[in-house]
Length: 85
Image (tube, rainbow, N blue to C red; front, side):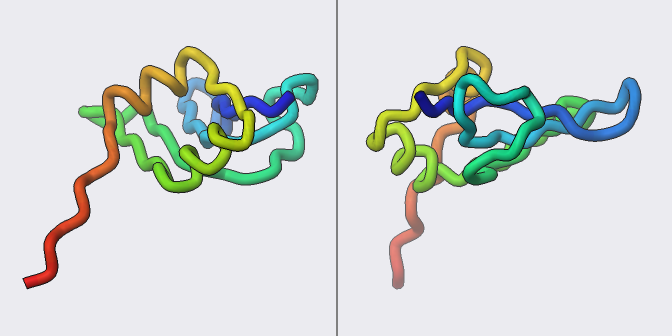
């Protein structure tokens, strides 16, 4: 089964996370299928950069989101497309 979850990067006590699509059984920082976003909790406010179109694609194809990723997606919805004038 595929999971959309966080993979930890960065130095000791300075975490930086990638939102990745990965097989559920693989290690946290194992080889992922695709990076679909980034999360930096050290900035104030925390910086979240998500590819909502890719998240939607993977969830439609059966990938499950971890509870933390679900919370990040819910708190950072996709921006509405700007109308062309």
